[in-house]
Image (tube, rainbow, N blue to C red; front, side):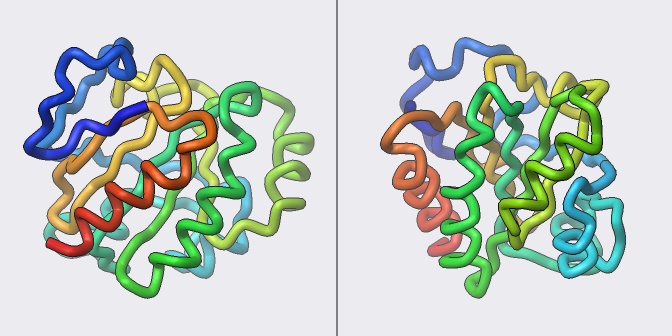
Length: 178
């Protein structure tokens, strides 16, 4: 998996086979979704519903230097949540906010139990009708988008496998060191 950096040269990479509705350098699409792990959402924004505008853009209420959006389902990289937790803990003090978005249409009780059992410190949102993921073009899961403080997409990729955490960390480091 390769990420497409803002000055990217990876335009022909197979990792980008899924069409996206947003591109690197464009404004990220705003959304508001309900959190599955409401405690993490309350800690992040003081609400059980989380919006990208809470963290980026013109007047964010909880400004971040970077937001990592991670679209997944239980069958495709739900296991990556542990890596995201480590990444969030390492970088949240430097301005990173992680937001995971599941497209699972599984029973909410089952999904909630699975997410709550992981005791994640970042919000996991539910897009079970795939409205937000479709607008973002997140068809081939998982999909990660790194958004800067102004709300522009800095990188897009499909992180999987053993290099998952390292590749995400590399992009986060590049954005936060600007």
